[in-house]
Amino acid sequence: MMEIVVATRNKRKVEEIKRILAEMPVKILTIEDFPECPEVEEDGRTFEENAVKKALNIARCTGKPSLADDSGLEVYALNGAPGVMSSRYAGPDSDDMKNIEKLLKEMDSLNDKKRSARFVCCIALAFPEGNIKTFFGYVEGIIGKEPKGSSGFGYDPVFYPEGHGRSFAEMSSEEKDALSHRGKALREFLNYIRDKIF
Image (cartoon, helix red, strand yellow):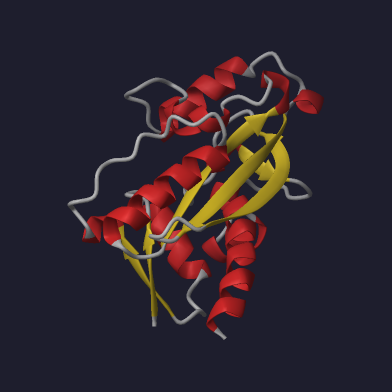
């Protein structure tokens, strides 16, 4: 069975990845299984740069294929912000709630037509010898005016995917996985890895 190290300490991301990859004969490890691996600084200008850097560093540290994702929210009226700063939008000590509060404050004066946004995900698969493959997923939607729902994480309580009247945080895990940017990128990865394994 192929072993892949998921290069994140975010437990909710790991759960999401495990759920979507459940059908594959792949053993998912995390960087928690390799305490000797260093923390990788996300200092890239794009989601792809960050994902590739994380995956490559962890693949070289563990000697195993590594899967890293970098994802975030891009609000069109804010010139793509928070973008690669999504998890740190409210500053170094930010958390999901502080990030959402800052976003809603920045968008306070925007009417419904100007609240369009998209979630972006880049997944990088890196091998210890340096080979890299990237996969992308996008989901368009709008930003609500207040958080709703208690599922998910990040900006899920204020993001309404296109054509849906509920936020990601009001959906079941299965509903969100079917629509989400990470779900789409992981399915691209699945198609690729399926050809490699079988």
